[in-house]
Image (cartoon, rainbow over all chains, first blue to last red; front, side, top):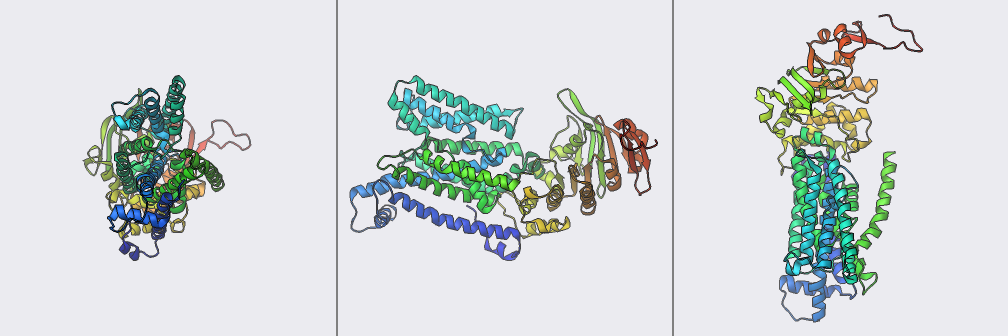
Length: 363
Length: 262
């Protein structure tokens, strides 16, 4: 996360950049509070309502080993600690990760419609997951067979996109865009064929559910820890490399003229982003629109400079996905709807509004 | 001093530069001229390491450019490139602050010195009032100003510009070049317009098919016979307004105006 040394601000009171930094600090502070509130709400709300004081008691007991009389019931403890907390944490991580990856890709290919799935990662993950669910392909991964094969599929797909986009040692933004779209479509066809070729209606249904994204599989354990590590790493790297990313977003020649090697930076960021998205997709399926819409919101709030926009996008994405997951659980409770449906229902109109404004601004 | 010696370059079997030599001296504004496809932009890109020559070498103050990383080069040489950056989402201030990138390490945040350099650069190009505007909302002339400011913020020794007058109306063409003359100590400018070159450059290099046809003062380079043979258009020259200025003779008689006497 970005912090700003107070003495720097004191020394240049009238600078325009100081104002932008102050604005970003206010947004980050507000969003941090918002995230905390959202996480609590995400734990409280659902098919079974859990009152706030119980949540505080359970969390205090587990986190700080607060001794004392156990006044809450066993099931309530399980709901808060075993089910909802890992779930809201995963939601926040997935939201934050998708948002910053979307933002990085939009800068890398200089296209505001780029999203984290541009690299074919989600199509690859879907193909891997479909193979695991429908045909029992497990790669010897045991209990992590589903997320493991999704991850392998995601990595394979992004390698393929990279190989196609790379030519004469260079990866240009246009080629990356086209390669991503082409590989994505090809793998979607493979997934569809797998579903078609399988006899299992039940299996097809679970692939479908997975394709639309769900956080229902969240639990304490390695996948959650891995997601946490990778997402925090990605956010940090992107924020630290914010200026380089700004230069890259202007153009390759500009980046080079400013001392940044565009090819090297793009390749390094592609590896990071592909890895991050692969981890997220294998943990929660492909949840659409977050990575597309949130970067626009963040830029609208604090401007396009990545040093500021990346942390803000991360927080916005986290909050958005926590609430989307709450809706997914509550709308048809006790039945759950895939979270991807919620994000699309909210995201699509949002995008339309953005497009309208964009046109008005350009005219 | 930037010295290029015997530069050869080509795409596939099409050669673009065939043994090009040029020298950009400190304190002088050098204009690179030549018809479309003569290799002006290619030559300029070699001067900051964006392209590597197939043969020949470029040196920066005696050190081979190939031995310097882009970061080292960007501290000495600032470039105003022609790039499709009109849809950048950055504000003017953010755009100019990018000029500090070569002087900041990855983990360093912009400090007082950087903000001063940015303020000064904006002031020198007369763009201080634009700081809060979005770069994309500016007019073509204002954008060029801001890009020159970004280059100034780099605090480099040399300024390279690739057709900075492109898409600008007459007034802004003069404004931008006048600005470059005023603010940049040493510059290399790729230009299409020979008369602008004559007015704003100290030295000129005229290229044709990847070779230097003529180099030296505007008076020497803009020799009507040479220009005529390179561009394939009739030329007459006047010096009424100070530096030599050329009048071009249309290839076919104009329909509504009388043809100028050759």
